[in-house]
Length: 492
Ligand code: ADP
Ligand code: MG
Image 1: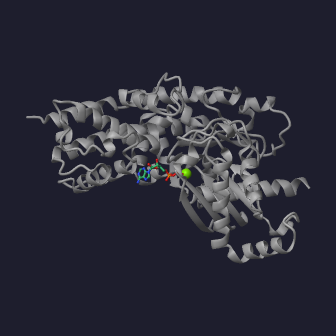
Image 2: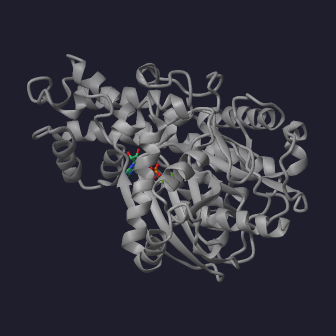
Image 3: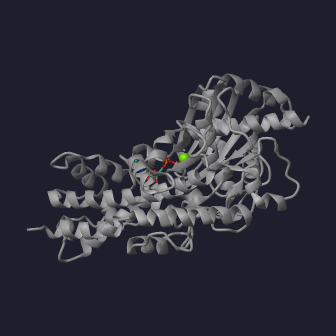
């Protein structure tokens, strides 16, 4: 006799099945939207030119600062590139206070960021920094720092911006739960530089780098061998990807005036902003858990791909699926409602973190002990039955697998579009983000879907290498700052 709990979990899981046909329809749509974005402003895929026209080969050298404003955390680091594919990094990380993410004043957020940079300099680069502070105190604060006293900083900013050169970028829209209207349409480098200058720090914002571009550059710098990386992709709070495109295919560049860049490589890194792939919902899967989540989000109808794929949302999709089982009187998951404390995260929007999925997915024990513990820890649920735990695992698996197969749609389309499967022995993809790093088998699910795409297939899938770009945002931003300084030096 089947258990009503397991039956219902399986029924819901079936709603999340994303078939091989779905994958292929997705790839076709993605290819179309890629092309559209290369030709037109305001397309669904923004396909933003980054003006980065070369990717590193590992010989780059120098000492840089980098900061990363990406979603959940703000990171500050110093990076020494050794020129042999290796680097040393020091970093600090702080969670971004919720009240600074949704506020009226952009200055509040950026002052907070500058304060973190100052304390990083004091803690980690105290010798250099103190001599700076000393000089500033002796001289008038108005006396500018000498060129050689200034730290060049790469700014990893993982939101869509219109880039007007390497250290100038105008915010198109916030994503991932941020909402500060004042900053939209403004140059985020100037916001950061102004906050830095207010504290008289010897720091110059030299380059603005999307985290996907940073990941691509960092992976290309670090990966062994001569082959360069094709794609940088993020699966963290949000999801997005950047890739190396042929210049002559970025047809909208012809209508952009007044930006100088090096055309000699014939290539440019393009930031796709794939989080908004198919906002029109022509091919994306849609369950009632997805659509309810969207309605309750700060940006309904936008970032529809991201809302099915990234860390910010998977926990919440799961919560909604679990809630429907809790509310269902013929199922009574967790013996609901009596056994669920009213203050359980289950009753709160965003009450389940996506790390919960990784823990449950990784639990292969017969008695699902880890799942049980996590239900207690995360949701304050006492003594769930084994079927309760199994049901949670069934839902987790379904939601995680769909996310990975959707990721394969975006990555697969970029690989196919490059045409490199026919010519190159290896196609390299750099990735970053907690979801791909910690959710078990995320990459395996992606690879399985690659094999189901005829233009890739099992043969092509074997040529594709996927590697985490460790500390990608820091190293990538450092490489961005380096490229920017080379451009300045070159134009002198
Ligand atoms: P950011 O996006 O700020 O650069 P991360 O790459 O660490 O940071 O992504 C944070 C997101 O990943 C959050 O949405 C969080 O819920 C999710 N997350 C954190 N830990 C895990 C984990 N172990 N497994 C899956 N997702 C996780
Ligand atoms: Mg990140």
